[in-house]
Image 1 (cartoon, rainbow, N blue to C red):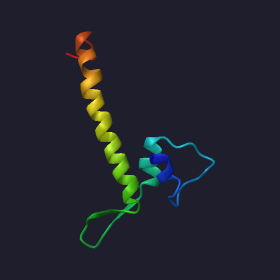
Image 2: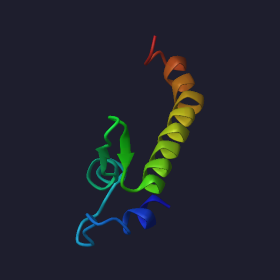
Image 3: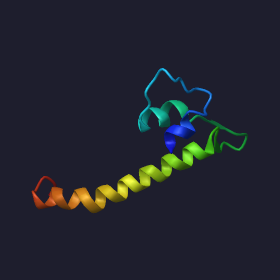
Image 4: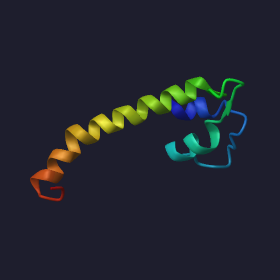
Length: 75
């Protein structure tokens, strides 16, 4: 989903391969309005990135962290 939305941004270059980090840092552009609020140029892209990061965090905490504790890689 993020790739399709990313392709619609002005900064998208079809010669590059974008990962989530590159999409967030290079294509998810924003500016500050007169009230010093951050306004994203592509709110759909920003929303998808926030959703993906949230889901990754939940997955990490549910699936990966218990295994790390089990093998004492985290204490």
